[in-house]
Image 1 (cartoon, one colour):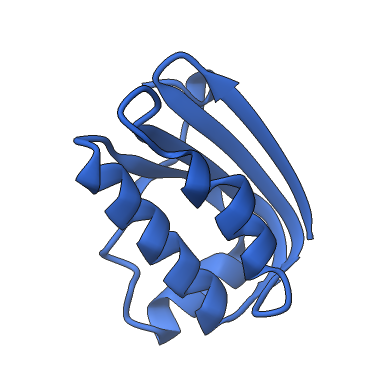
Image 2 (spheres, one colour; image 1 turned 90 degrees about the vertical axis):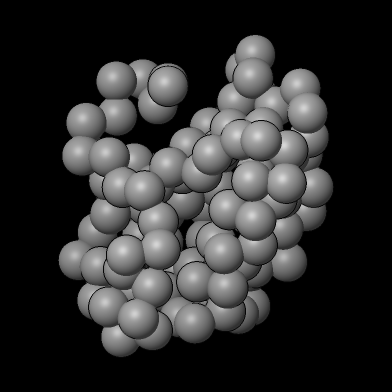
Length: 108
C-alpha cells in the first residue's frame, strides 16, 4: 500500500494505492485516524488506485468515519476502484459511506 496524506485547514486528504488490507491498516490508522480532531474534522479518501482490499480495510474506513463524526466532521470517499466497490458490496457497507465521483481537489 502506498499512502499519501495531506493536512489542510479543516481537512485531511488521503490517497491510497495498491493493496489495502489487514497487513496495512495499522499504518492507515496511525497516519489518518489519529489525525482527526476538532481542527481537522473532515477526511477525504481517494481509493481509485486501490488494487485489492479486505474487510479489515473496510473496518478502518468505518473507524475513520466514526472519528470524523465524533468531531462534527465528515468522511467522503473520493472515487473508488472496482476492487473497492466489490468489497464494499460484499461486506454490505456500500451505502455507509458518502462517495463523490468528482474530487474537485478533494475539498468540501
